Amino acid sequence: MELEQMSEEELMSTIEMICLSKVEEMHLIGYEYVTSDDIWNCVSSKYEKEGVPSLHQLVNDILSLKATALMNYMTISAYKGSSFD
Image 1 (cartoon, one colour):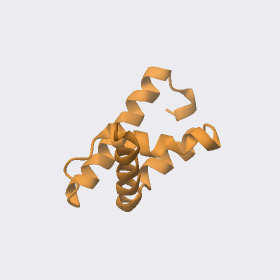
Image 2 (cartoon, one colour):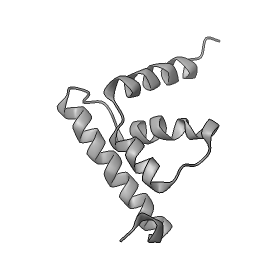
Image 3 (cartoon, one colour):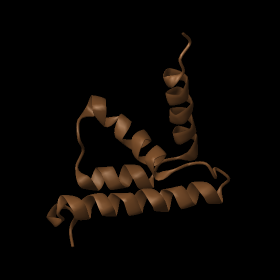
């Protein structure tokens, strides 16, 4: 089945599986604390500025995510989320 023909539920399930696959890859190279939410948030954060991509591009972005880009994103997110009150 083509991604464009999937229901929203099927699409989200497929994206979750792709993110989990990427999590397993990250775990294999030593990033044991990475979650599928981390993967999704990292990839989807760039779409806030660029707009929603095609499904093909979205899947490609998840699969091609590099550990360094993910770690940079997580570091910046943790810093921005820190409260210095």
